Image (cartoon, rainbow, N blue to C red; front, side):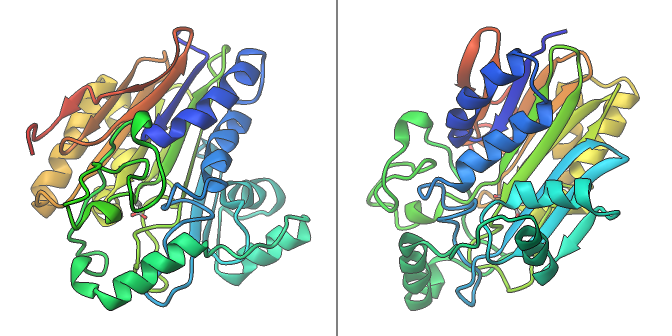
Length: 327
Ligand code: ASP
C-alpha cells in the first residue's frame, strides 16, 4: 500500500496538494483532502479554468461544475453554479445533505445559500477581459465542442500572470493561441493510510462554451470515478471525448478485469482516439490508481502533467504514457 497518496491533474494542483498532504497523513478524511486541493484552485484567480478567474461561457457568464465521490453509492455533483465559487463544497452538499446525486442550475446556488456559503461574483476582471477579447476576435478560438486549441502545462515554474504566461502557458509571446491554453479541470484523487479512497473534480468547463453546456467533470463515470476495492480515476481535457467513452468508469472496469492502472489509462485513450479521431488541437489526460495505490498518468499528447503527493513529498510529474508522443 502506497498510501497516504494524493494525485492531481495539472501543475496547478501542487499548492493544494501541499496543503492537503499533512492532514491526510495525520488521519484526515481523503474527501477533505480532495476538497482542499480543489478549493485552493477555485480561489486562485490565475487558474482560469476553475472557480474565480474561470473563463465565462459565450454569453459572458461563468458557470461552475463539480463532483465528489467516495463510492458508487456515495457521490454528488453540481452543474451550472452561477453565484458561488465553492463548487466542490456544493457537490459535497448534494451528496451529504440531499437524497440526490446531481443538481443543476439555480438549485445549486439555493443549496449553497441554505448552507451559508457566501455568494460571489465569479467573473474576475481578467476573465472578463479575456471574454471581451474573444468576442472581438472570435476566430482565435472556436466555440466548444469544436475547440481549436488545447491545454499545455508549462510546469509549476511557469506560473505567472494571465496572458503573459499562466500556469499552463508555453511562455511563447509570439504564439497567438498561448493565452487560451489554460483551460484545464482540477481533478483530485486521495488515498488515506488505511486505503480509504475519495475523489473530486472542479471546473468552469471549456472557455466560451455554449451556455448550458456541461462536460465530463461533474458526471460520475465520465470525469471521475471511485470504487472502493477496485480503484479510482480522474480525467481532464476535451470533455465531450471523455464523455463519449465513459472514460473514468471504463478505466475502473478495466482495472476490475485485471488491467494495471497504466494499461487501463492506455485503453481509455485508445478508445478516445478510435472514436473521435482527435486532432493535434485536442488533449485528454487521465490519472488512474488501483486499490493498492499503484497509479499512472497518461495523455493523448505532450503537455499534460500530474502532481503526486506521497511519502517522497509533492512533485509535478510527466505522464507515464503519451499516446502520440511528439505531437
Ligand atoms: N474536461 C473539462 C470539460 O470538458 C475541461 C478540461 O478539463 O479542460 O469541461
